[in-house]
Length: 160
Image (tube, helix red, strand yellow):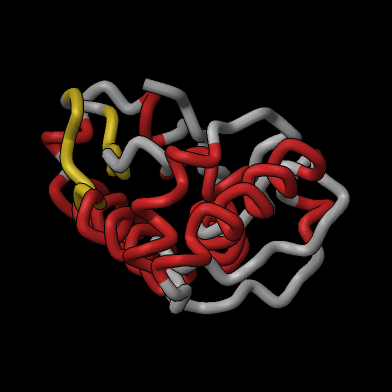
């Protein structure tokens, strides 16, 4: 059995092309749903971190950055999220230093913190990120897993 990427003449088989498009649209839609839904499972399956995934508060930018499935080449169907932090939301981050001042604008927009407490809160968040990293919110891999299980197919993720 050949995979969709191995089929040299997929463009000559409109039925197969439509099936591939429907599957990718379903994965894309489920990934969008996952961005706004708290993931219930532990993240040992989806991340190198030993923490539970979290519901994120910045999903709007990622949702808007999503590019629905398109034919990248005659035999390669793709979709992507263009937001700079899409990957890090998916997998989380290990502990790393961050300048608390870089967090102040985000805190002002996203958290209900009085202006006179923003510096203190940004320092506390920066310290937590430096200590434990940022928790993952897998949205893409669970969508791929669900759809590939449903159709008994193998979906290959390739970096750009």
